[in-house]
Length: 115
Length: 111
Image 1 (cartoon, each protein chain N blue to C red):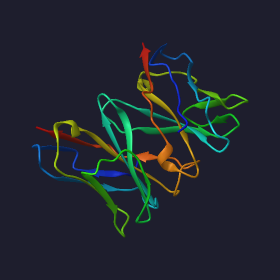
Image 2 (spheres, each protein chain N blue to C red; image 1 turned 90 degrees about the vertical axis):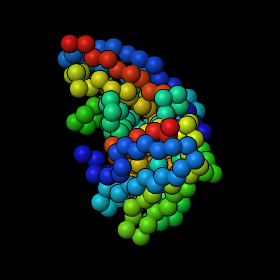
Image 3 (tube, rainbow over the protein chains, first blue to last red; image 1 turned 60 degrees about the vertical axis):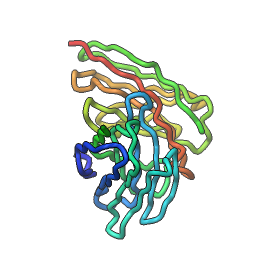
């Protein structure tokens, strides 16, 4: 158990809909990262927050947005969903604000299926 | 962004050592080398990391080349539970967003 909690574990929705994925980081970790893992693209970095502020941005689509709340949990919002958005979405947390030696602790992921 | 190159797959026999290589020829002087593994239907799990010196922990050892352009993850005695996809990534202390997970190495452990 990594200490990172993600909900929901599974989600099935239709194209055009909007969903919210939630992540609670490990106790004491201020950084939250979001990754997308699809079959044909591996683990893709989406975005990182540190203590409520956006810290780094990857290949996140404009239809996607995220935020980190004062209690440090984070939400990833996916809107106008397309079939290609079907994937596993992982949240990871770390104690440090950037890379370097800080270990990443991953949650179990949220599997999104768009029909 | 500094990228890593790993073999797509490797096989090992149970209870034998496994050496998983990773090339990172464009590594910068401040990048840390991290290894993670992902078991089926689970999130990636931290294994080990290092900067310049070789590192050991309860899970594995990390051997880093002197020029830091390559590294090797060593599992001393592979078990069936070590079958996973192993990722070698570089973590830049100034920009966490530059860490790129490649395709990793799928390790198969044969009994």
